[in-house]
Amino acid sequence: MKLYEFMGKQIFARYGINIPAGRVAASSEEAADIAVELGEVVIKSQILSGGRGKAGGIKFASSPGESKQYADELLAGTLKGLKIEKILVEKKVRIDKELYLSITVDGTTRQPVLIASASGGIDIEDVSPEQIIKKYIDPQVGILPHFCREVSRRLGLTGELSKQAVELITKVYRIFRDYDCELVEINPLVISGEQLVAADAKINLDDEAQFRYPAGTPITEDRTALEKKAHDIGISYVELEGDIAVMANGAGITMATLDILEHFGGKARNFMDAGGGADTEATAQALEILISTKPKVILVNIFGGITRCDEVAKAFVKVKNSMGIPVPVVIRLSGTNEQEGIAIFKEIGFDSFDNIKDAAAKAVEIAKAS
Ligand code: GDP
Ligand code: MN
Image (cartoon, rainbow, N blue to C red; front, side, top):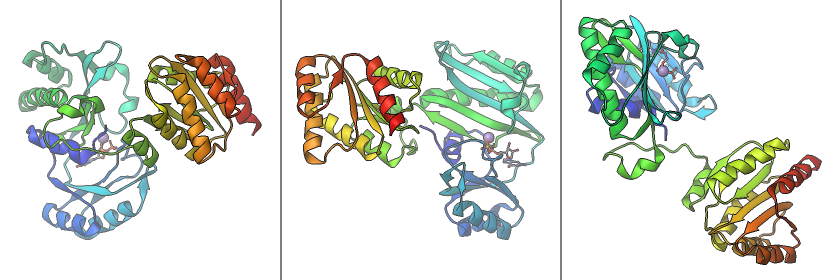
């Protein structure tokens, strides 16, 4: 789960990390009021995406009137396809230098890694590998002062700034651990005179750890309406761009199904893991969601382990009888109660395949022909 910049900065503030003075606003009047207090300000669009600077979502205003005008413009529009509901109005920090600092999880080595660079800012993607400092963190040991001092030295910091960097890195790692973060990123980390200031904040939390987030942790919703509906009934669902709706039971088999579709030149409309052990009711709800997306064909890939093939088939009968199934369905069924499932599907006129290759090829053929 991604947090908005202003939420990330609330967490930074709790840990005593230096952030610019400012407040979040939902109207241009509020933005103007904040600018009266702060003087020269930066108006920052709050969306769950980075790259706002390059996309025109960060504005500099030198008067409350100008703040109001920029706020009006931003709040009326979208940025990177996302509606701007809120803006962060902050005192403009004088920038002497922009650094980059983050801690994330390296999926390959399966441990936290600190990434830093003396060349931060909006062009961080273009920084050459030699300018990137990368240090793995042993989670059993955590971060020790000498670790931070080395990073600080390699960032070229000395004296007071180096002292602040050591404290900052320690705090960032503490946040990373305390909040079960997938990412804590400060870009740019600004040198402003004798101060290090976190001018931006990007925090991604691990959804699976929500049960133990610290009290008061902000929550965001980045699912689409349909994804949310599916999530609420216990189905993992992600909307995609293609025309072949996919239902499978288990995350691994779903991914494999999408890969096989791709292999045959097809494009999935969604990722849907209807869950291992889904019964008739849950499967019927899942099917209704797929039908509502108006695909050209629905591809069902069920490997019955805990899931019973006949339960799945009964769900199709149920939906067919209640609302109808207005799209072709291609089925691969295998596993528990396979024969019973095949027989039920046959009754409503659906043939099934016993292997996914043939089923996927058939689904692609139907999608291309229609
Ligand atoms: P992002 O593009 O979504 O990562 O948004 P950032 O918050 O990083 O802002 C983009 C750029 O705007 C930064 O790299 C800075 O160059 C600039 N910027 C942001 N805040 C300030 C500020 O307080 N003062 C100055 N001078 N520039 C800022
Ligand atoms: Mn940034």
